Amino acid sequence: MAASLIPKEGEGMAAKAIEIRGLTYVYEAGIVALRNINLSIQRNEFAGIIGQNGAGKSTLLKNITGLFKPTAGNVMVEGIDTRSTTVAELATRVGLVLQNPDHQLFAATVEEEVAFGPRNLGLEPAEVAARVEAALEGVGLLHLRREFPPALSKGDRARVVIASVLAMRPHIIILDEPTSGQDYRGCCQIMDLARELHRSGHTVIVVTHQMHLVAEYTERTIVLCQGEVLMDDTTRRVFSQPERLRRTHITPPQVTMLGLELAPLLGLPEAVLRVPELGDAVLSHLISHSK
Ligand SMILES: Nc1ncnc2c1ncn2[C@@H]1O[C@H](COP(=O)(O)OP(=O)(O)OP(=O)(O)O)[C@@H](O)[C@H]1O
Ligand SMILES: [Mg+2]
Image (cartoon, rainbow, N blue to C red; front, side, top):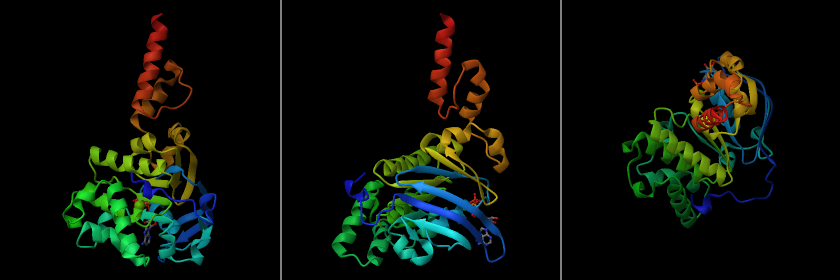
């Protein structure tokens, strides 16, 4: 990851990346998509948002980026009320990779695509070029800079959109189902990129239906159910409660379920999230019983 992508500590940087109070969002058709949501996301968190189809995940993300304004309540991004600013201003603080990245692609070349946002900020051409270069380097796409985006693989198209977001240098990066339609390798590459962004100082929020990715990568998980926050805790504690998760039609990763089944036998103090954790627990059990 290029060092220049690391967000700088700036003036007016609030301690909380996102602060949501009493957020209700009603679509014009009268559909209440979000009901009284209260959430705080600290700077440099890596959080997952999960929940069944229609739970309100994308609607929540669009409220955070200012694309939608709350019907009631407030959304503050780095201390700024989304109602009192523009989407363009917010885009320098929070970047959203939409559920279908193809909806965000429109330019003739990869570099034009990535340059669009910074150019719209009115930056000098040299600064635009530097940002494009750093963002493409960050996602490993420098070699494809002159390609036609729709002709790229799905994984690379997703990376172009992530680069477009990075070029705006937002502190907060939100990915709405970035791995949908990707094969296993593509999923890991995108999630590894998200992890790198987190490690370089960004606040990262990922929405996904793939529970093993949530377990593998995130620290905190927010569970939405019918427009409300059902759970908000460490990912480990969230996945240790399969009964509650069932309310929003979610099953923890297979390895976690197996760990919960074997917990009495193995004496596991907490839920396992990854295969090696369970492997280690089984091994210690076998060793202690073979003595
Ligand atoms: N443009 C719209 N007009 C009216 N209702 C909408 C609109 N977009 C979404 N909804 C409704 O709002 C609710 C929340 O939808 P949202 O897309 O936020 O869910 P989601 O959790 O992102 O689902 P998915 O996992 O399928 O992406 C659903 O009941 C949905 O039908
Ligand atoms: Mg969605």
